[in-house]
Length: 290
Image (cartoon, rainbow, N blue to C red; front, side, top):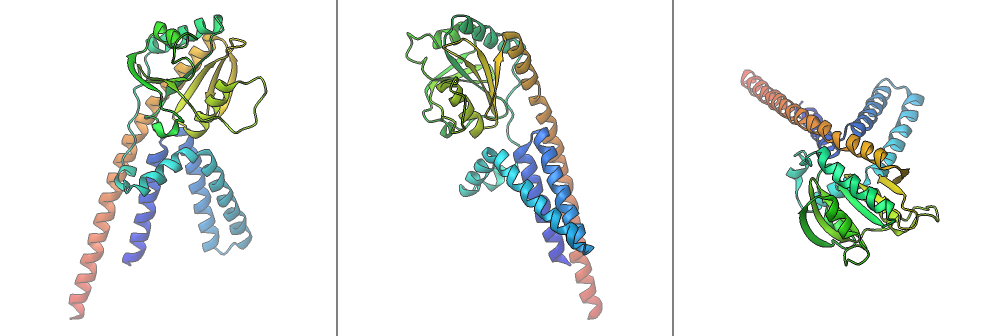
């Protein structure tokens, strides 16, 4: 009797860990769909529907492989935490970055607009949810820790400065570092795309909790990279709209985490109560036999 309860409890803990690691609502729907497929497959197996079970099992395997490719960044960081023995951290929701106020987005967009008009190349990394591990960069760059301003961003990317040939990392309302060297995407891209565009694709392929704003040095066109995909060309007003929409979504994740924590506490309480009842039942049964 006790073994099935432990089995179900471990599955619930594993599911909770996966939901906490992912956290993003759009991805949670994917996980929910995979769980539904797994439950349907288990039901078909229990009812001995062999053909349906066979098809569902193949769908589960295909969906799991597809999710592993889509969420490779999260899986890689989770395996690293397991390797370092940081199991308890997997049960804690990740700390969220404070949504950028409109004033910060306006400073960024105004700087990008000026750089675009002057055809000055630029590459900005904007963190969305949580912080980026510096090991995801080829070279971490030079620490600045300065307040975001249009003048600072424009100054960094002037060709006469030593930090222009690299990316600038923005966390919240702070310019964290400049001169960051990013991994280049291995995906086949258009010949019109330069090193900055391929670097933006590379880091957003590797890390999901960021977006990159790119200004082309040759044409002055503006691009926004997310999950390895470039949205281009953009006007400054369209970029402002996309950034405001993107960073307003960070609030959604703040709603998910407390719900998961309360759900985890409820499940833990119920499992503990069930286990104690089973122990009391087994002890009373042994007394009656005596």
